Amino acid sequence: QSALTQPRSVSGSPGQSVTISCTGTSNDIGTYDYVSWYQHHPGKAPKLIIYDVNKRPSGVPDRFSGSRSGNTASLTISGLQAEHEADYYCCSYAGSYTLVFGGGTKLTVL
Amino acid sequence: QLQLQESGPGLVKPSETLSLNCTVSGGSITSGANYWGWIRQSPGKGLEWIGSIYYGGSTYSHPSLSSRVAISIDTSNNQFSLRLSSMTAADTAIYFCARDHWQQHFDSWGQGTLVTVSS
Image (cartoon, rainbow over all chains, first blue to last red; front, side, top):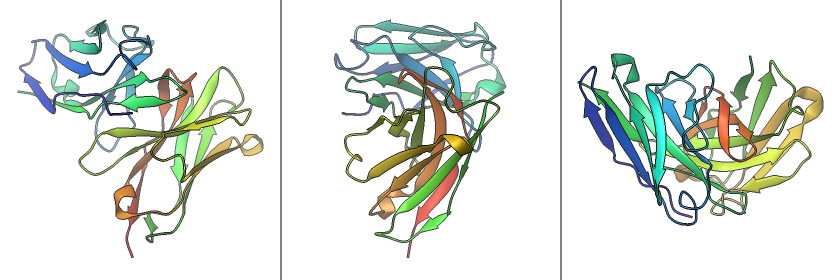
């Protein structure tokens, strides 16, 4: 069971959109509809922002969206704001009652 | 609103066993279709799922840690616990507890507790 692959860092200017990719395999992202994304400001509790590939929990604005193509899931944040600067993690169910996370992506708002 | 709080020692000696508790408030640990999980973040690295437990007692853990992991649940005190044996420096991390919705996603998290392995 290997970690999902995310870019180490991405950046964007306020108002722009950014997309973070998360690449897995046919044993996780490619098979199961249980891909989730988390926003983590260091020192605080991680926050669920996307689940089941593209669903948003109550209270999460629609500027956050999720998608999947094959073995790769993506998180798009539109209308970047300074408060979006954080670490973002993807996670997928990987069968046999196991879960796997990505290595995390640091988003910098320029 | 559901809240989770980790507690335990901040320092563990090599080869010893780590014991952490997670206290759940604002809801019952036995309600809903929920598992309860442990996740960690090693320095400079990403999140790693350690394992999860269903309130009925069924447990599941990361294949690479399964031989060292024990997760238990105390429904009377609304708590669940992690024991990780044979600790090494590689186990130094922030340990989070979280509500695991049917092994699909983690929808409520604690703030995490730093555990350092050092003699």
